[in-house]
Length: 248
Length: 327
Image (cartoon, rainbow over all chains, first blue to last red):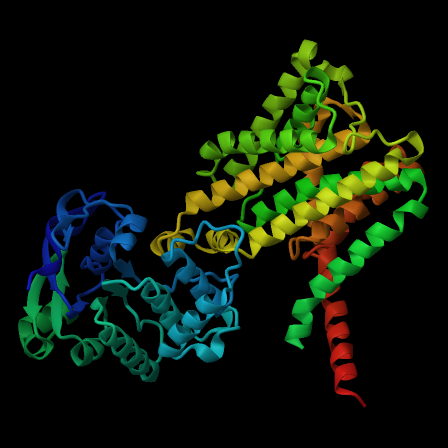
């Protein structure tokens, strides 16, 4: 099976600071890949480069063999790559349901319609179904500012999931939530995403979370991939633990 | 109770419309004129409120107000078009066309840049209207003869009333259009743009298209207001495009609030009457009176006059609920 997403010689400097350099990554269809590494190792920059948030200085990104290097976010999303954010990016002035209804309308190419109502019955049903999958149906009529942090994280992913992506990139989906909630959130996300056969890449600081949920782990350090393999084998390796934690 | 609350705006709109239909024949002519002007200007303010929902403040919306008025005025004077509906259509198309032209450039800007670039364009138009006096009449202005309604020129005693009902009819249509816009996917995308542009792009939506479309619609509404006001006043002057006119629209938008498309109408009516009485009772300090009104609104009613409707609505919903449940 060929790589669904791959990068080659991907390099980005912010001024004199090297964010990533000659990054070679291959993601296979249907994989659930965790990315770990210390702060500033280039994890989020990798997601930003793939999804067009920043343009690389050199190198390339391919999606199903097609060069998507430097495409703007909207074009990348339309190809089937979605992402979520470390700080949930939601519409604070809308309710949970409205956030999702808008995502569904845009997915259907109806985002520019100005005469038909957003809350059409079939759209509302689909939105409620997605909210149910993510365990958010009880919050549907609340404003997003009334959601607990875990709910905001889930809604952030749900908005991306509503596009029916083939690849989903998640940036620290459990940061800022309690230890108990972390696993509940990951259980929900993995269940929904695996059930929909979405190829998933997630950046995570918590090694326990990565070890429990990822099928494969990429260890980033200093803008490069320094280790790649199944989590149990990788985390048993003292050199990898040193690269991530700075100690054995 | 939430259901009852949701139905309240419709009830208010229907009751308000009945009031606006039934009462004016019994009002003095000057009041009728103020009401007509208030409804006309409310259309421009609705455009401002639409843009505000997208987080966009414009200090140059009078540009479209003037474009609509002068386009209809030129059509009346130069082409001999006398039919009121045709003049409105021409004015609105001219306003929308101008907005399409400027919006292609302005839709990329935000915050103070958007506000001031709009102001700059409106002042360019003001200068053109002033300097090309052989076309526009300069400071003397342009006469806008009373148009015909379905081929009939209303007789003088009924002229004001005819203008009023014509303005009311188109105003209600404008409000309905604005309501459809804000409840549509595009209207919600515009609100989403205010909250989080990055997310809109990452959901596959076009921020530029949402802002551009709203700008054109707001421009068309501004032009509609301009034509209707021009018809009511019967005379067009370059001050229609002046920055103080734009400031007045923003003032009224804040006065009414952005909570509903009915708010600009409430704000506009209150503004016209407050200004009229302020001028009557203190002709040299009427601007100060308006300033105090704005200060009062900002300090005590930051949501505008429309925010007063919320406690009333809750009380009404409670009463309706208890009445439905019986003793």
